[in-house]
Image (cartoon, rainbow, N blue to C red):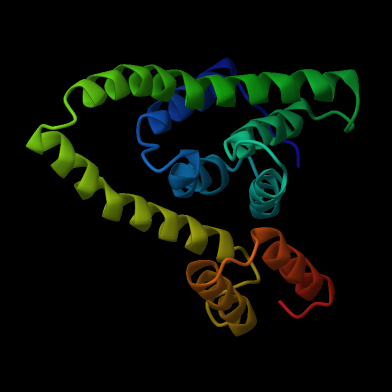
Length: 198
């Protein structure tokens, strides 16, 4: 996929991730639906398959789950380079995209978290602070459910694609009711996908 990005587009990429950073209440993954809307639907800088692969690869890899943001920026940069993958130009564009996305998603939330956590710890007994923490829980759950729906609804996997939904439901139940390690579920999903069952 080849796209053309102007300086204003790169700035838009940075400012969009800056704004999403302050909404990442349940972690960066909770803002994934809006990243999908902007990168895939509105700007068309990424394909659905690139978006889903970025998230899946980062979630399967060890380390913080915010790595998917780096991969999203990397893929936007690769698409903007118009060069052959692995070439110096592709690397340069990929690194620029990755740096802008990571700077945008980390800077505001890190600064706010540092300041707010110090203040909240100092005022942890205030009723308003406890109410705020309890009130944010359903918001986080809703954002995570929206994220799951976005990932499952890529082209070719419509809601009537019942094996995918069945597998998602079974995995959700297993995670909720058992202590089965997530890597077993990832492995099972990979095998089912490899055999073409989901």
